[in-house]
Amino acid sequence: MSDLNKQDNTQIPNDNSQERWNTWRIIKWVLIAFPILIFYIYNSLHTAKSIKKKNELSKTLKELHSERISLESEITQASKQTRLAEQLETKGLKEISTPPKKIVRDRK
Image (cartoon, rainbow, N blue to C red; front, side, top):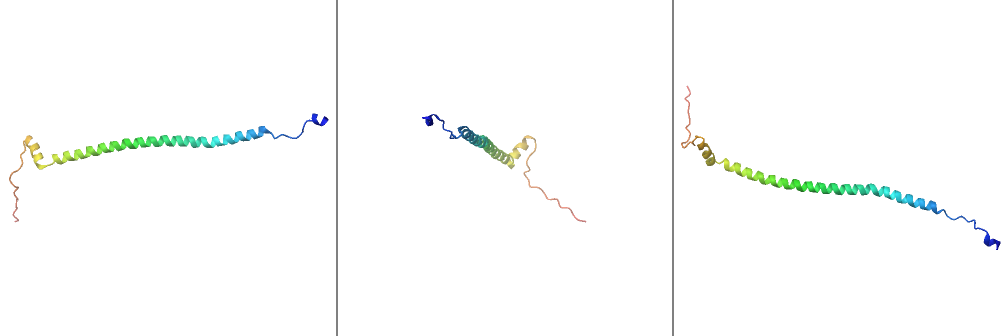
């Protein structure tokens, strides 16, 4: 009976050190995962911003292209000889109807 009353002196593993080790392991994973998560979020936002800017620039480029084509058409129409003659007639200049004469100089 005295054996039953005696306490067992065998050492129980320290659960506190195991718990600390598990906590440190979790902290290490958080310290690794957090910067990766921040980079992923930044990269996603930057990509979305870049795509939006690309679409805006593409739209602007299409508008400028159509404007260039219309301006080229206007310039082509304005530089035709009949159109120039009409514009110059309003200013008092008339188109020459006779061909130019060649002036020949005698050599002496």
